[in-house]
Length: 152
Image 1 (tube, helix red, strand yellow):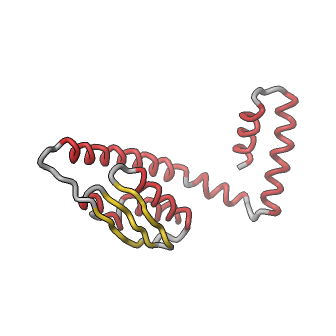
Image 2 (spheres, one colour):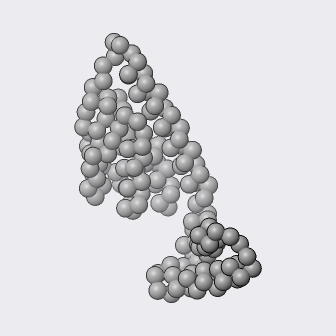
Image 3 (cartoon, helix red, strand yellow):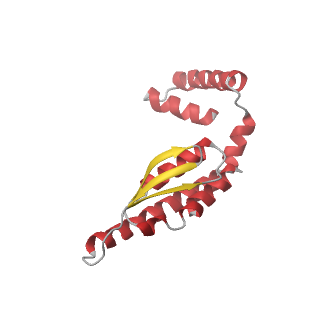
Protein backbone atom coordinates (compact mmCIF):
# COMPACT_ATOMS: atom_id res chain seq x y z
CA UNK A 1 0.00 0.00 0.00
CA UNK A 2 2.90 2.31 0.75
CA UNK A 3 4.16 1.95 -2.83
CA UNK A 4 0.71 2.64 -4.23
CA UNK A 5 0.47 5.79 -2.11
CA UNK A 6 3.92 6.88 -3.27
CA UNK A 7 3.08 6.26 -6.94
CA UNK A 8 -0.12 8.27 -6.56
CA UNK A 9 1.90 11.04 -4.91
CA UNK A 10 4.18 11.23 -7.95
CA UNK A 11 1.28 11.12 -10.41
CA UNK A 12 -0.57 13.94 -8.67
CA UNK A 13 2.62 15.99 -8.18
CA UNK A 14 3.16 16.18 -11.93
CA UNK A 15 6.94 16.15 -11.76
CA UNK A 16 9.66 14.41 -9.81
CA UNK A 17 12.31 16.43 -8.05
CA UNK A 18 14.43 15.52 -5.05
CA UNK A 19 12.34 17.78 -2.83
CA UNK A 20 9.04 16.27 -4.00
CA UNK A 21 10.49 12.76 -3.71
CA UNK A 22 11.67 13.24 -0.11
CA UNK A 23 8.49 15.04 0.92
CA UNK A 24 6.45 12.20 -0.69
CA UNK A 25 8.40 9.55 1.24
CA UNK A 26 7.63 11.31 4.52
CA UNK A 27 3.95 12.07 3.79
CA UNK A 28 3.20 8.58 2.43
CA UNK A 29 5.04 7.00 5.39
CA UNK A 30 2.95 9.02 7.81
CA UNK A 31 -0.26 8.18 5.94
CA UNK A 32 0.60 4.47 5.94
CA UNK A 33 1.35 4.60 9.69
CA UNK A 34 -1.99 6.36 10.25
CA UNK A 35 -3.83 3.67 8.26
CA UNK A 36 -2.24 0.85 10.26
CA UNK A 37 -2.82 2.55 13.60
CA UNK A 38 -6.33 3.99 13.22
CA UNK A 39 -8.02 2.26 10.28
CA UNK A 40 -7.48 -1.41 11.15
CA UNK A 41 -5.06 -1.88 8.27
CA UNK A 42 -1.98 -4.09 8.53
CA UNK A 43 1.06 -5.22 6.62
CA UNK A 44 -0.46 -8.73 6.64
CA UNK A 45 -3.30 -7.36 4.48
CA UNK A 46 -0.73 -6.13 1.98
CA UNK A 47 1.03 -9.50 1.94
CA UNK A 48 -2.26 -11.34 1.41
CA UNK A 49 -3.12 -9.06 -1.52
CA UNK A 50 0.32 -9.46 -3.05
CA UNK A 51 -0.03 -13.24 -2.83
CA UNK A 52 -3.36 -13.01 -4.69
CA UNK A 53 -2.01 -10.99 -7.64
CA UNK A 54 -1.85 -14.06 -9.95
CA UNK A 55 -5.49 -14.86 -9.11
CA UNK A 56 -6.53 -11.27 -9.93
CA UNK A 57 -4.70 -11.46 -13.25
CA UNK A 58 -6.37 -14.79 -14.03
CA UNK A 59 -9.76 -13.30 -13.15
CA UNK A 60 -9.15 -10.37 -15.50
CA UNK A 61 -8.23 -12.71 -18.37
CA UNK A 62 -11.32 -14.83 -17.72
CA UNK A 63 -13.49 -11.70 -17.69
CA UNK A 64 -12.13 -10.56 -21.06
CA UNK A 65 -12.66 -14.05 -22.53
CA UNK A 66 -16.25 -14.23 -21.26
CA UNK A 67 -17.01 -10.77 -22.67
CA UNK A 68 -15.70 -11.89 -26.08
CA UNK A 69 -17.80 -15.09 -25.95
CA UNK A 70 -20.90 -13.14 -24.95
CA UNK A 71 -20.32 -10.62 -27.73
CA UNK A 72 -20.23 -13.45 -30.26
CA UNK A 73 -23.42 -14.98 -28.84
CA UNK A 74 -25.26 -11.65 -29.04
CA UNK A 75 -24.00 -11.06 -32.59
CA UNK A 76 -25.23 -14.53 -33.56
CA UNK A 77 -28.72 -13.74 -32.22
CA UNK A 78 -28.81 -10.36 -33.94
CA UNK A 79 -27.56 -11.52 -37.34
CA UNK A 80 -29.52 -14.78 -37.56
CA UNK A 81 -32.89 -13.99 -39.15
CA UNK A 82 -34.52 -17.24 -38.02
CA UNK A 83 -33.22 -17.06 -34.46
CA UNK A 84 -35.38 -15.09 -32.05
CA UNK A 85 -34.26 -13.87 -28.69
CA UNK A 86 -36.21 -15.09 -25.68
CA UNK A 87 -35.64 -12.41 -23.01
CA UNK A 88 -36.09 -13.49 -19.43
CA UNK A 89 -35.61 -12.51 -15.84
CA UNK A 90 -33.67 -15.03 -13.79
CA UNK A 91 -33.11 -15.22 -10.04
CA UNK A 92 -30.39 -17.20 -8.30
CA UNK A 93 -28.37 -17.26 -5.10
CA UNK A 94 -24.66 -17.67 -4.44
CA UNK A 95 -22.60 -18.61 -1.42
CA UNK A 96 -20.09 -15.79 -1.80
CA UNK A 97 -19.11 -14.50 1.64
CA UNK A 98 -17.92 -10.94 1.13
CA UNK A 99 -19.86 -7.99 -0.17
CA UNK A 100 -16.97 -7.11 -2.49
CA UNK A 101 -17.20 -10.53 -4.17
CA UNK A 102 -20.98 -10.29 -4.54
CA UNK A 103 -20.79 -6.81 -6.09
CA UNK A 104 -17.94 -7.92 -8.35
CA UNK A 105 -20.08 -10.80 -9.60
CA UNK A 106 -22.99 -8.43 -10.24
CA UNK A 107 -20.71 -6.09 -12.19
CA UNK A 108 -19.23 -8.93 -14.23
CA UNK A 109 -22.70 -10.15 -15.15
CA UNK A 110 -23.58 -6.63 -16.28
CA UNK A 111 -20.31 -6.26 -18.21
CA UNK A 112 -20.94 -9.36 -20.30
CA UNK A 113 -23.21 -8.48 -23.24
CA UNK A 114 -26.70 -9.94 -23.16
CA UNK A 115 -27.06 -9.91 -19.38
CA UNK A 116 -27.79 -7.19 -16.87
CA UNK A 117 -27.95 -7.34 -13.08
CA UNK A 118 -31.27 -5.83 -12.06
CA UNK A 119 -31.08 -6.42 -8.31
CA UNK A 120 -28.72 -7.74 -5.67
CA UNK A 121 -30.09 -8.35 -2.20
CA UNK A 122 -27.82 -10.24 0.20
CA UNK A 123 -26.87 -13.31 -1.86
CA UNK A 124 -29.88 -13.19 -4.19
CA UNK A 125 -29.36 -11.91 -7.74
CA UNK A 126 -32.00 -10.95 -10.26
CA UNK A 127 -30.69 -10.63 -13.78
CA UNK A 128 -32.23 -9.84 -17.13
CA UNK A 129 -30.92 -11.91 -20.01
CA UNK A 130 -31.39 -11.32 -23.73
CA UNK A 131 -31.94 -15.05 -24.16
CA UNK A 132 -32.68 -17.95 -21.77
CA UNK A 133 -29.51 -19.69 -22.91
CA UNK A 134 -27.44 -16.93 -21.28
CA UNK A 135 -28.72 -17.97 -17.83
CA UNK A 136 -27.70 -21.63 -18.06
CA UNK A 137 -25.22 -22.50 -15.35
CA UNK A 138 -24.87 -18.95 -14.10
CA UNK A 139 -25.07 -20.08 -10.44
CA UNK A 140 -21.79 -21.96 -10.86
CA UNK A 141 -20.26 -19.83 -13.58
CA UNK A 142 -16.54 -19.36 -13.99
CA UNK A 143 -16.91 -15.98 -12.28
CA UNK A 144 -18.36 -17.54 -9.12
CA UNK A 145 -15.63 -20.19 -8.99
CA UNK A 146 -12.85 -17.63 -9.37
CA UNK A 147 -14.39 -15.28 -6.79
CA UNK A 148 -14.52 -18.13 -4.29
CA UNK A 149 -10.79 -18.66 -4.81
CA UNK A 150 -10.17 -14.94 -4.31
CA UNK A 151 -12.13 -15.00 -1.05
CA UNK A 152 -9.86 -17.70 0.47
